[in-house]
Image 1 (cartoon, rainbow, N blue to C red):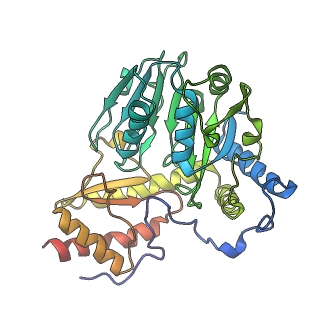
Image 2: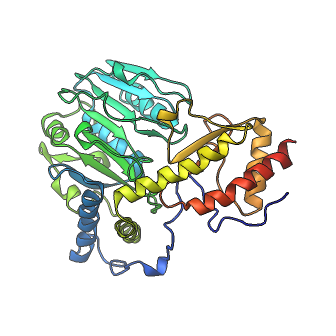
Image 3: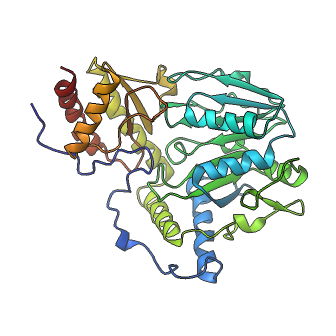
Length: 371
């Protein structure tokens, strides 16, 4: 029978993701709007965002956190173009965004000494193949595959190369072993449900040393430059951004950070996401027609939960459209490059009560479309 109750919040998109529970744009501190981001109040807001990020994520004191343009993509592009070329590169891919970084490294930067370790959607390559003398590029969580790195144990503590990690759908939902990560990037619009257009770069002292000692052979656009005169541009990491940021987005991010603190901090965010995954796991265990795309439970994402169905691609599209029209689930189709299926965001801003109300609709929709 057709369910009667609908999720209070039907937003299950994997980016931009659902806003935090209780979100009200009228509650934002908008005192910076209409002011220069270089003004005292503008720089203070940006610096506060950086400091609160370090505190919330337990980032080591000697690591630097900077706000940069163009979301996580911009952050990763900036790092790849600024840091690679000195060492051989090992790059691990198992979904679409990892493949984009591979394209940058091999076809745009045209680096010669590159080893590629790939896996199909639903699988994870053998990370132990990483050479600790090489720079290693990887995603922590495959947003479009639902497969994540289980831990950082495969990373050598005495490595000579840098680890460069795209963690945009992992930060604030999965533990980050900062001592294993030299460069980490993410964006506000994922786990915190923030607004888009801005990226965050987290640099270890070792990464800063690379930036200050190595100059790439290729031209560097201004928007990618992290150094000047072989010195780190410290302003990027203290509130003086490279280009003009949206102060409205900054206010929105600060609101999200305050919400994290109000619910008990990082551990509560991680637990919420894990609880959401548990709701999905129980449902899938009880229904034979739906499965996780991730083949190994140990590498199963607790944010971008990707699902395969016993259905044709056209039937999957019909199901997605049906649930959208019913107002119970928006934007849950698989990523365009991924196998046909569903992708349901389970990050901390999604309430488990909404997931539980969604699942009967999935069953009803599947029977309606596929039977």
